[in-house]
Length: 208
Image 1 (cartoon, rainbow, N blue to C red):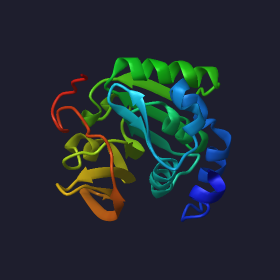
Image 2: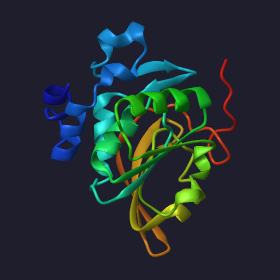
Image 3: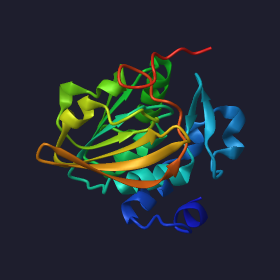
Image 4: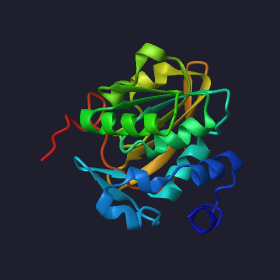
């Protein structure tokens, strides 16, 4: 996975590559999909959610310009896989998930893997996590209609937000940098994510 899907493309950050070598992705997928855990595609994890394609996770994390001295907020804990990757390369990770069952499952697994620098919260990620703000970096793992205003407020000056934004025809991954009171954005790549639910997302979450 690392050699061909990541190094073979444009993932060059050594900390990101080492994190992917260390975190056992097969532990974060349903038992019936373990054989596909390292495939170059997303997989369902229940509740209408997915664990993203390894390359896309690596691309997003690399776009954050990670550093071991920084604090990061993850919007959408999901399986906890991206959370673990972030925990390998950031000082502190704060992660919020709307679906309690997913949050608890991820928390239990990361505790078993001895990650002690992750704080888990259950709630509306589109509103960020004001309790521990400001953050040096924010990663959103679901597609939003726009950059949620609370995230603009909770990112530190000089900080970076990486977020997929839906443009009708599909999702585009954006990177925003905060300079003073301004958020300067750039388009990075096309992508496809489940929709962000909540006050600043695409309505309330309903699992059927």
